[in-house]
Length: 289
Image (cartoon, rainbow, N blue to C red; front, side):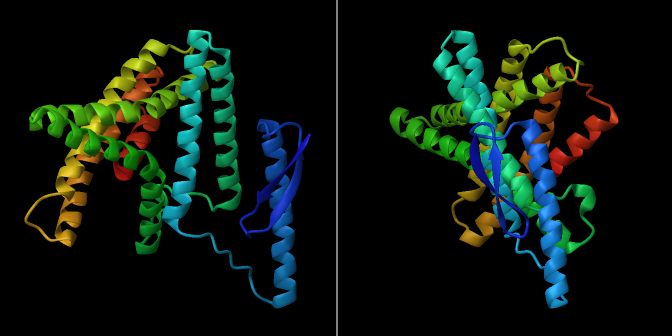
C-alpha cells in the first residue's frame, strides 16, 4: 500500500492510496474519476465564491508535449529492456525493464490528468489552435529527435576527424543516429503488436518483424535528421536564415519519413495499410513530422 500525489488540471494535488508503487489500469480509472469529481467541485466552489470561471494555467504547448514525449520514450525503452531480458534469460533486466515501463505509463497518466487533452490536426480551427497543435507536436518529438540529431552530428564529426573522409564520417554519423533511435522505436513496435495480441487480432508478438521494421525506421530517421543538420549548419548564411531554411528543408524530409515509419509500424503489427484508420495515422504523422 502506498500513497501517491496526483495533480488535476487546476494544479491542486490529491493524495491517493494505491496497492503498489504505481497504479495499475483499474486504479488509474478510479483515480481519474475521483480527481475529475474533485476538480469539478472545486471549479463550482470557486465560481460561487468569486463569480468568475476558474482559469487554469496549463503551461506551454511545447512544455506539455515534452512531458508526454519523455514519458512515452521511457515506456518504450522499458519495453525493449524487458524483451531483451526475456530473450536472454536475464531476469534482473526483464524486471528492471518492466519497472521502467510501469513508471513511464505512470508518468503518462500524470500528464494526462494534469494537462488538457492534446489537439489533433482536426481540432485546428485557426491560428491559435494551429500554434498549439504544432507546439505540442514539436515538444513531444523533441526528446528523441534531439538525441538522434546529437548522435548523428557527433558521429559525423568524430568519424570524419578519425578517418579524414567526410563520406565515411557521414556513414558513421547515420549509424550512430540509427543506433540511438533503435531502442525506443523497437519498443514502440513491440507495444503495437502486444496491443493487437491483447485485442485478439494477432496470435503472438513476432520479434523478427519488429526488429526488421526497426532497422528500416531507425535508418530513415537518422538520414532525415542528417538533412536537417545540414540545413542548420549551412555556411555563408546568417543564423536566422540558416534556422528558417534548415527547418523548412528538414520538414520537407521529415514528413515523408514519418509517414514511411508509420507504414512500417503498421505492417510489422499486421495492421491494414490502406484503410481509413491507416490514412488518419499517415496524415497525423506527416503533419507532425
